[in-house]
Length: 135
Image (cartoon, rainbow, N blue to C red; front, top):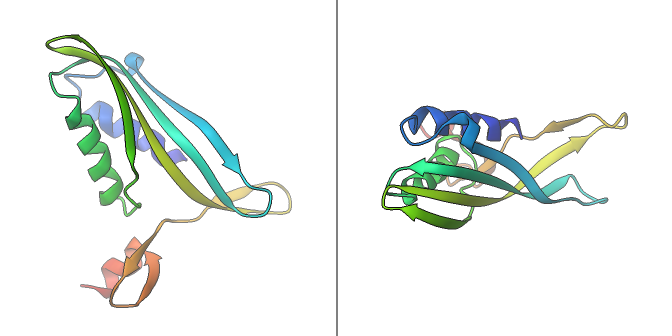
């Protein structure tokens, strides 16, 4: 889930005139780690307070493209927004995620890299493998 912190940092960098670090919050909510699998299902919730921009959709399209650029499956985004005035709004964006964990006997874990479909290989592979094969 460290990649979500990178997303938050990238949002703060790319939307520096609209967002400030003290008004961007990241939560993990409604999570479930099933007892019989390594799949962890959860919602990453971003809360953006007092955004200074007239277009809340630019944040959501950036999030979508960010996941795509990192080789992750592009998740569905659900959102709520309170329009404060013509140039200011609060925005909540919920991102439904499924990550694959390898849980070791000692309780430690590692996050498996995301897989994408490769037509050339006819299988799901990591983005790095797909990019190398499909040059």
